[in-house]
Image 1 (spheres, rainbow, N blue to C red):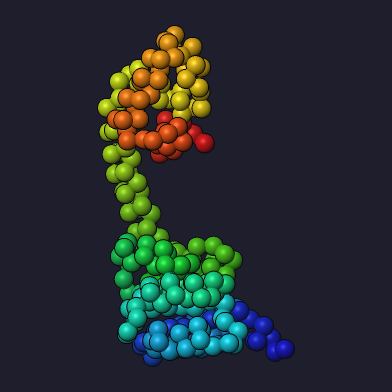
Image 2 (cartoon, helix red, strand yellow; image 1 turned 120 degrees about the horizontal axis):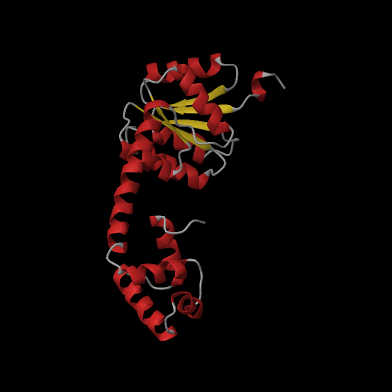
Amino acid sequence: MHERESLPAVYIVDDHPAVQEGLRGIIESSGEWRVVGLAPSAEKAREDLLSSSSAPPDLVLVDLNLPGQNGIDFVRDLARARPGVRAVMISVSVRFENIVESLAAGARGYLCKDQGSDTMLACLAAVSRGELGIQGEPLEILARNTVRLASAEMGLERTRYDSLTPREKEVFRLTALNRSAREVAESLDLSVKTIENLKSSIFGKLDLTDRFDLYRYALRIGVVEE
């Protein structure tokens, strides 16, 4: 087997010939991968990758905006039909929604087309190792918005928790620590019936159904740790 044929195979899906050739040049000049196919559309890529009986590539670079079926839908189909193939989304857009939808569809990396060749190769290498291939601005946007959403959710959760009385918060914490009603009653010098009544009030105020729900809620707001 020739040395080049032993390199991991990359397939490129992009409807701009200049982008195709630019990506191929960067990838092949690295000496780490070989480009085994180019497609201008999801339809052509489907023929080559989903309908063909030939060996699939190791990595597929997919443009987000493709004629016909878009890149996100194609990656979703690819993940179902060829779960061993790792996809990397490429786009001029670094919108948070696009990044999240791409990853949710099965992409293992996200590249902005104006990122440099070193960043691209580093992302491909990370995906090849089974890691998430996101660097630079896409990573910053993903992290910043994830923190923003998590903070907003935690703020809402804390608001509900703050509606509890001080005594209910004590019972909440001890219950989250997997203490039984009798153990909680002994700790707080209350009757078991009083503890059960307090727990019923807690479940109602926080819209929880059982102790496991309560434990997960306590984790989310930081009252207990795993």
